[in-house]
Length: 108
Image (cartoon, rainbow, N blue to C red; front, side):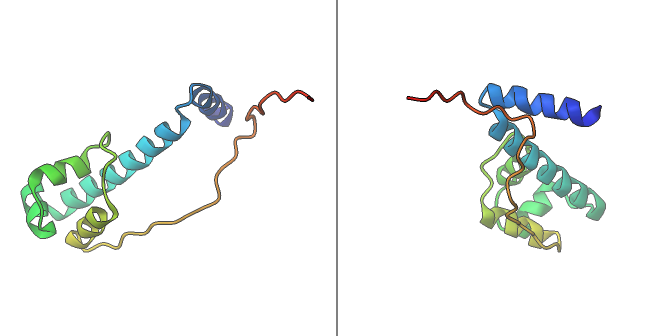
């Protein structure tokens, strides 16, 4: 039942033309959450994080903001190094929704 609800939500966002934006925001939220947890575990304040990264506190706050999608690869690399972590980025085949509607095509 859970998978069906997920498929229906994806279909709804796809119909609205917002599915890719929702997916991007979800990835950013996961990343921001992971950074916050690592900072908390290591007792690193935003000011200390900024110092370690060689940047400003507002940059750190933008990085930790799940709604802010403008993080660069360089910023993510510096953040991971500041926490003694490795940044992994993967390219994977796009997931295809089972119930994805195909556009209606009429024979000419």
